[in-house]
Length: 340
Ligand code: ADP
Ligand code: MG
View 1 (cartoon, rainbow, N blue to C red):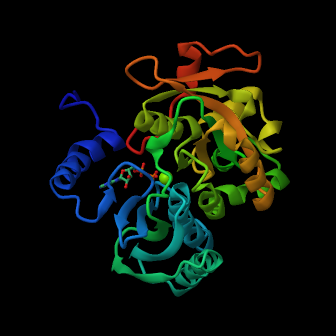
View 2 (tube, helix red, strand yellow):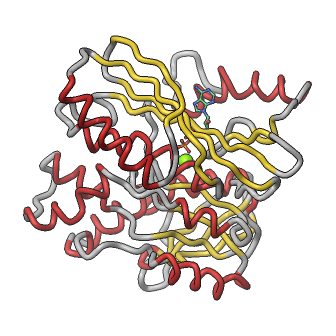
View 3 (cartoon, rainbow, N blue to C red):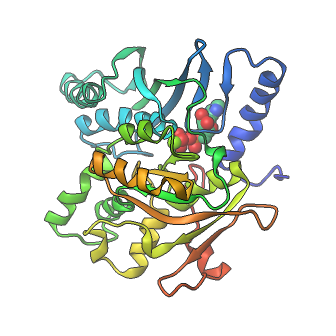
């Protein structure tokens, strides 16, 4: 049990003050709710054949972006991170609301913000349908709604023993960009230009999520770091995992970094918004076809194992086929907690 004085993490806050009470209410009367707190989206039953997936994500100035951030990129990213949660469930975007706190109504800032916002809204046919605007410290909160055929949503709890574990695209570029912008790492201008959009204008894998509805046993989007996010799947599915560190796909730019940086950024860097999913080995051919159709690399990085102890474990396997010991693994396994 958490002592009174120890700091609460993001997930402790949700569990202690919101999730327990929400679950008690839903246990007494689920109403139209088919899935509550704990996945990338909640699900509401809206008819005999369809459910609505709902997700909210907030971007806070000073926490998620720098004060002088390009407003066009911000508009894009605010919606992209929500569409990414819809993608993780296999939902098709239907619309979104925008709650905005602004320090001042600067027309040139708003024009650029709106341009980025509607560029991605148009690309994914996801219209703005309402919201709220107030004065205050810059804060952008979007709630997005997606449609999905009944019982086809891909949940975090469905991973099965011996399933393959897959990721889309490459992992670690957003973390590498952040390191370069913080001057922790030096990148050439051309290298930075190549990867910077990965952090500022991520691509939600909406088409992939929809294609995986009938194929994946579980999925989530990687917003807080691959291994930390994978742990959510394992926890909810009561499983362990073996991960081959060398198989985690990395961009040519990340591959120019030291071996340690490559592994750390790929395994734990947040903000890439690729999908991590599990699927039975019998689906390998179908997954290869989806990757080819979408022109998106899909890489098998490990497999789901039955749980050995009382909590899920991730065994990290290095290039030589050796399993990292606890100390080596711990050094890697720090995910991103918003209050840590
Ligand atoms: P994601 O990274 O996929 O957006 P989060 O890690 O932010 O998901 O949240 C984990 C789960 O907790 C989600 O199901 C989310 O809806 C829920 N959640 C987060 N904050 C709150 C809150 N303040 N009240 C209720 N549910 C919350
Ligand atoms: Mg998510």
